Image (cartoon, rainbow, N blue to C red):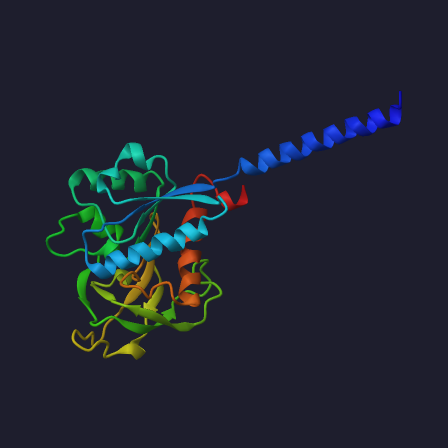
Length: 266
């Protein structure tokens, strides 16, 4: 019997088993996290168009199994049982509608959940009647907007923050309808404004004109794991590489700041 051949055979088996264990160990890290994105088809057409593009954009990012990107157009999915399975809730063009949904969302966020909101996800007015939600978003009520949708010059407020690090000091964002809030969320001590509309844009608009005022467009409430981006109207939002980097870096940052640990370092 050839002892050397047996040893080589055993060595080959050992190598295969080792490789299999490494593979299984690597696969065990995926998916790293799960996202649940809420959207509605029963809203303004430009908001539906944005949601469709956003779903494709994030599904492309999820390619390869790094994370799970689930979507739902059923707002009743905003409940304790459903939310406990997700590290991030994303609001593409919708928001909680009733007390049950609002309370489930509040509990989720106060227990360390993550939130990523676009555009109309932060809309509120005198009839909204949701004090916690208003405080969560920075205290600002919808005040006015430009119209028609227009590109805008944006400025970076904090170039050292992980969300904005590496971006130019200013850039021209694609066509969007931009919301201004009153009072400005910047007035709250727990609000960190990351990107603002440049005053160079004023007067801003053709039909509906914003003449002046503070105009944050990306911010986070430091009491929670959340970020809000004013972008989200129409089909142009994902057409610019600089803005896409901002969107991706904001997404990664919210996930990475989970109190249970940074999934990207596990």
